Structures are given as structure tokens and as C-alpha cells.
Image 1 (cartoon, rainbow, N blue to C red):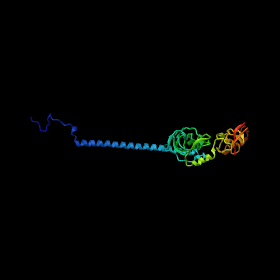
Image 2 (image 1 turned 135 degrees about the vertical axis):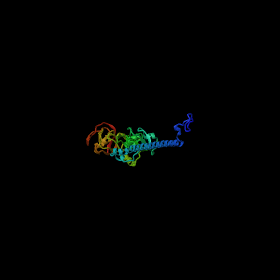
Image 3 (image 1 turned 45 degrees about the vertical axis):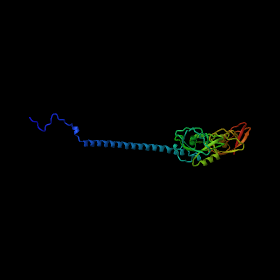
Image 4 (image 1 turned 180 degrees about the horizontal axis):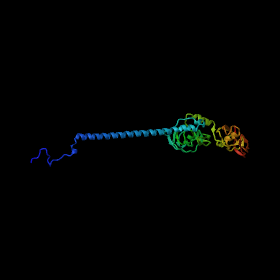
Length: 304
């Protein structure tokens, strides 16, 4: 029996269905897949850029906030400190050479007239300072900066100092949580450069600020020499020996109050004159101040 011409031989190879797909259609599918991949990469790249910008903006805002707090707090703290509290531009720690809170001007090895801008780190601690507005060169620069109202312990900041020649006397005062000490002659000093530096220095030179426990023993003793001091208000009691003529180790401010120049509550300015010692000193009570008796003492002063 003859087979039909339309029949397929049993030995013929049947082409699999997937091979019957035309080549152009396969290329189009691959092209669409590549486009989807490219689109996904673009989306991921844009998302990364957006997140980066948000992070940078947040960091910038945080830094701006940190740098604007110092001036505001300082102005509040120094409302009653006199010329030294005059506003100065806020400083960022990045503006100066980093330094430690222990560092003083002697370590700079500079010459009189040179200026240095130093950056004090946040979270500082107090270190020794001698002087008031004019400081001994071995005083902590950063701590003196807090005392002057230019920076704070919490936020730190940049300060600019100018090296100067030494003085025969350095005052003492309490400002912004820092109490400085008085001192006699010291060969080098420094001041802070601010818009009113010269006015501040002139006042400190005209009348040396002292605390109520500061005695005349800190000055270089020279009979007949006069010194002018400034005593703060709300004074505290401290020892005095004598009446009208006081031993050199007596409190300058309390002797002035005893002599009637001002009261402990008000404080004020006083000029003393150095005198030779006396064979004895008599104590009295005047103007609410009691002084003590003493025997022979080699140096004395009177209130002018």
C-alpha cells in the first residue's frame, strides 16, 4: 500500500519548539532586559546621590549650630565684667592652630609684638592664670580666654594673643567662672587681640584689679612708690593689721574700706603709698571693718 505524500517518515528529525523562535525576536528580548537593567542602575545611582546630599546637609547644619552657640553664651556670662566683656566676633576652633588647655605663651618661643591664633578644644578644664586682662606669659592661654569672655570651657574656640613685655605687677579677678591670681614682676606677658584691646589694657595699667584677699606684699617694695588698685563689689573679709598705717601683708581692699574709701558692698578704686616699717601696729574698728594689733613689721603702706 502506497503511503500518502503528506505523511512524515518515522526517521525524520522533529525540530524542537524553542528553536523555532525567530532570531530577531530573541535579540529584541535581550535588548528589553538590558534596558531594564540600565534603568535600575540609574535609579540606584540617583538614590545614592540624594542620600549623600541629605547627609552633607545634616552635617553642615550641625556644624553651623555648634559654632553659633559660643558667642551668645559668652555675652550672657560677661554682662557685668566691664570692658573685657565687649562683644567680639565668634570664633570657630578650626580658625587657629590647635593647642591644649595647659599650654601657655612661653611655649610659643615668640617675640614681643608677635601675634598667634590658637584653637582651644571643646570640653576644656581650668589651669593656672596670673593677671587680669594682662596675663603673665606662663598663664594658661585657653583658661585666660575663658576669663576674658572670649570662649567657654564647654565649646572652646579660637583666640588671638599678642606677646608683650613684662610688668612689675599683675592683678587678679574673678570672671566667667575663672579666678586668677595676682603676681609681682614677671618678664613677659600677653594680651588678647579684640576690637577694644588697647582700651582694656589702658584700664588694667591705670588701676590694677585685685581681689579682697590680695595684700600689698605682692608689689616690689620701694618706699614712697604709689600703686592704684581696683576692688570689686561684694567684698569678703580678709586680715588687716594696723590703723592708718597698715602692715604690707594686709588686705589692700579691706584696709581701704577700714579707711573709709568705699564699702565692701560697693568696692572701688584706691591708691596706696609704700612706707617704712613701724615698731608696732594698733588695731581698731572703723566703718564696719575690724583690724588687728601687731608688733614690729618692716614694711607698711598708707591709703591715699
